[in-house]
Image (cartoon, rainbow, N blue to C red; front, top):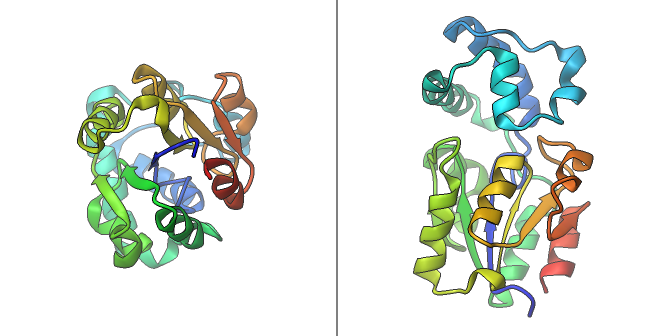
Length: 208
């Protein structure tokens, strides 16, 4: 088996939350006083990394945790609008049944994740690191590797953003890029991910 440990990002990887983000970001801009996103530029902005997007929005680093809390709060108020991507539930069950260790790292809150993922799927996770800071995923990956006692070469981090990819590479963990998330696949490909997934079922095929 190629991988023994699979660590997932949540938003844009397991959960289809990008439409909610687009609907909410300009509400947050009014509330926290940063530049609104021009919806005509969305496809271009999907090629930005997190720091480039912050610069575009005029959002200083110190304000990011405050805005992130606002986003989590708004999602909690309308959590019924967020669903898993088609096939995710089956994919998680298949991998778990085959003995793959599953884990999760996300900036989102535990309550939001649990409501979308549901307690049964949450129960499949060996470790779930929720409420992670924007650039804090590397340390969480390191913690999961240590607790699982899996060598980094036998683990894979699956996500949809450049910050996910750079966190994985910093810990010498292969990265799997998904095509259905926040960042465009052509942008992710320029960073040479170890695996590329164009549909959820491909995760099963390539992991097993």
